[in-house]
Length: 269
Ligand SMILES: C[S@@+](CC[C@H](N)C(=O)[O-])C[C@H]1O[C@@H](n2cnc3c(N)ncnc32)[C@H](O)[C@@H]1O
Image (cartoon, rainbow, N blue to C red; front, side, top):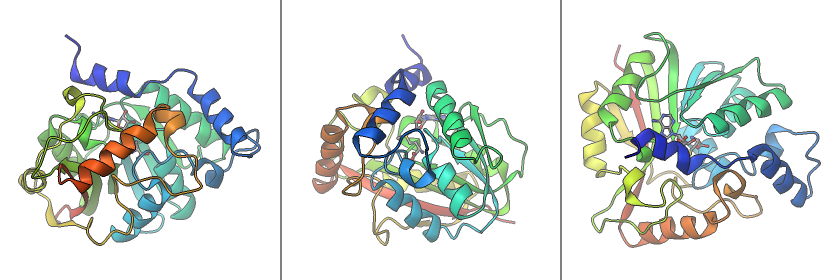
């Protein structure tokens, strides 16, 4: 039987991803030989609401300008590039899927942000960083693929500086769970570990976090929502069937099968 992490990597690995990205940009009328952060943002924020959700989450979490950030489960690096470019952050980024990490690295180089972002292959449950390394840990739509949330949250706690901020978006089980599969993060339930919102908060609290708030109800853009209109969306990186998988997420949300969360919590001093 495949390990959970192998199944997650299989789910996200595309092959020829750089080519797919260039083709999608060209089809949308961009000159894909000269990449920019703004052009890439049409397709590199791999969560509901795309760039808009990242902007809203960064604002709600009050990410300080120029701080040290860990992007935990960085995908192809859209949120990392946004924080380096807009907030002047120094970003360490980590992801289990080596193809995503390779593409993130190439894109960072091509937009001239490789001196501000370092990308590594690895798991959010076993972080290769020293204690107290970061002001902020950001993790968008990653925890749904992580069975051991106790390990994920305690690793985020360990690498944060005192008073550091942990912010993550998550889709939790609603009262009418299970959700409708296939979903953006899992085609079948075997790589989907959702838990109830209360359980997520309880595990976070047990890891030592304080000032825990779920800001999803005040966020104008939701982790499980549609991509902003007029953008390319996540299909080049996540698969051509993304529109149907996003529709299942939206319907599951409407039917109380899924509950979007956008959590901000603090490591105490
Ligand atoms: C839906 S994508 C979101 C990517 C990125 N956070 C974003 O919002 O653009 C989920 C990502 O989580 C990564 N992932 C899943 N489990 C992980 C783990 N245990 N450690 C590190 N990355 C993981 C996947 O490889 C994938 O890149």
